[in-house]
Image 1 (spheres, rainbow, N blue to C red):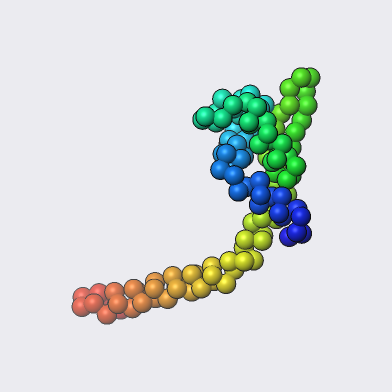
Image 2: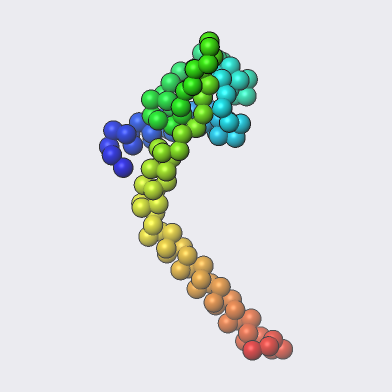
Length: 120
């Protein structure tokens, strides 16, 4: 992940209100700032517009103008970059977890097979 681009994405995602705004757009689809503000508890339209600007500059949302309205939608490319980065960071941990689960399942199956009256 390139430095400045990833810094902007992670900085944008660091704020819980921006994560909530992004989640709302992701669930509802394309919305105006006013529609997002109505769905965001305790955050006014002006504040939502500021959060949308940060999300847009980070590449996490796209803006489409139609007359006097601006519609916002989620963009996929920064998210896939973040997922790829986190996957690379946690790849070994996830592999270790998968191995531990497989080992536990094998131990459980062996213990069950060793119980009296259980088919082999």
